[in-house]
Structures are given as structure tokens and as C-alpha cells.
Image (cartoon, rainbow, N blue to C red):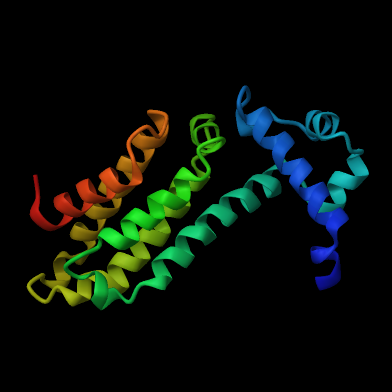
Length: 186
């Protein structure tokens, strides 16, 4: 199976399917996109599509998982202690990673696809709750759920507003803003 994943034909077919799906997302919600539309635009037959994906939801899930995987790699790259007083590097790198997908991220988010935001919330929440909050000994553990909810909601809402607004603000400016708000307040 590893050979098939590295086969250039497989890679090109998957890219073609993804590209067609993301094109269709520009005008349709994820629920409206059919395999027939996808195959027509990707110039493949239905059988070829089903060799790679069970349905359009699995395709969407794989795109979302890839984006979340990028964020996870960024988060895991930095030791939590290194970020205690300066979370800027991880925030900056995360928004930079998403900025590289500016061609389709707004469409993925705006057409009724809560999957990405939900997955981001889970990932950020896990990192904050298990790694970042325990380093702040001045915080009471019984307050962790509230602090976590506040930070996760703030970060993901900034992400949502940024994407919805066309991703015009730079990753650097957003990282500086989030760091300031997280560490100093308004």
C-alpha cells in the first residue's frame, strides 16, 4: 500500500480530485457537492474517485485533517516551556501555515464546514490544557476549564474573523495581537 501512496499517478489523481473539490467549494456548500460534479470537473470517472475516497465527506475530512496535521506539527515543534512567556513563534508559524492556503481556506470555512474550526479548537484546547496552563502556577487548576475555554474561543474566533475577512492581516500582526491579549489582556 505504501507503494500506491507514492505512485505519481495516485498523487496526481488525488491532487486533481482535491483541486476540483476546492473549486466547487467556491460556489457550493460541502453538502451540495456531488461525486458526479467532482468527477466531471476532475475529468475522472466515478470508479477512480471511489478508489481514493468513500464519499465527498471523506474527501473533506482528509483535507481538514491535512490542515490540522500542519498545525499539530507546528505546535509540537516548540517545547511548552519555551512558549510560556513568549507564545509568538508558535502563533506566528501557525497563522503563516494557514496563510499558505489562502486560495481555498476562505471557501472551506465559509460554505458551512464547521469541521475545520472544530478540529482546531480540539487541538488548541489539548495543547493549552495539558501543556501551557500547568506551567502557569499562579492559576488555580479548578480555573483551567474556564481559562482554556476563553483562550481557545479567542484564538479560533480570531482565526475565523481573519479567514472571513479575506486573510488580509499578516500572520505576524495577528500573532503579536494574540500574544498581547493572552499575556497582558486588552
